[in-house]
Image (cartoon, rainbow, N blue to C red; front, side):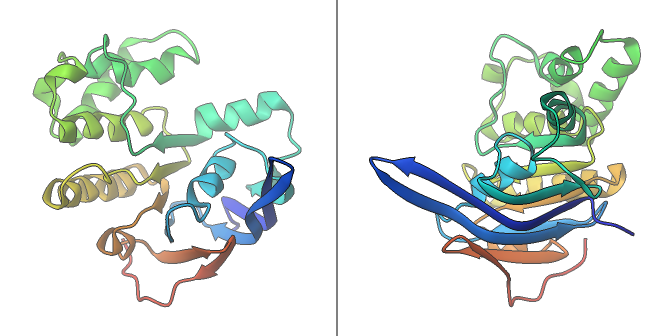
Length: 232
């Protein structure tokens, strides 16, 4: 089996105030289809930058990003947009729900960006909300939901377009530990049910330990973490 995502010698730097800031320095990363990986490290170590490059939101300064063995960084813009829209689901630390749209409508937004929304799309959205324990909250606006419920909607939205991989950037960092643990259970359950690969950026060692592989980003270099991790 080949890799779904792979990076070779990935580098990212920014020019600021006449100097060059190196964020990623020669990152090598691999993820199999349906696999799980956690990326840990100090704040500012470049974890979010790496996730953005894997998801096609940003381009590397050097090195390669491969999707199913094909280079992403040299692909045409339309192909990168297709990867972002169809291949990747994103979960961020903040839910970024549209405040004037119901929970159900927020899940349908990614579908509407690709074409007409049909009954099958609505059924899938309702199924995902049910899986997140929000079947009775589908018609509620974000302001009528708790913080944990809002993030559950965001997690469900990430799976809406049946992506190949979900990239989660500190998805439960703003929630208390008990709620975060419950949402972690739901996230990994959906990953298994949907057979979707999962990459987590997290400061939570318990959440990281649930991934099949754990990587640590230090001074722009990604290394396999020494901790033992349990399969999902």
